[in-house]
Image (cartoon, rainbow, N blue to C red):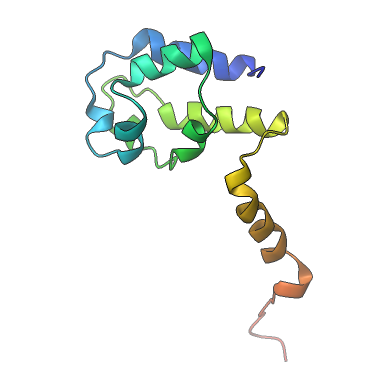
Length: 119
């Protein structure tokens, strides 16, 4: 997988600057499940990559950045990883239902517009 320069830079910033205080992990079930330390997780990403399920499992809520004393943006890093995976046409098989939902929910057949003031 070839990740974009932006994704690599974001991962390097986190891997090099995270002080492993684990404040981001306190309320994050995602980080609790996939790592013991976010700094090590991003080092692993840089050295050998991550299973695509990892970036797709982040809820992108931004809580990690809010509680991080350095304001490191883990959520944005996971988002750029997702964007790179999509560019490489590697969406997760588990997300096929989401893709179908997106297509159907925006189709004219299943979308109704209620303008309220028009009769």
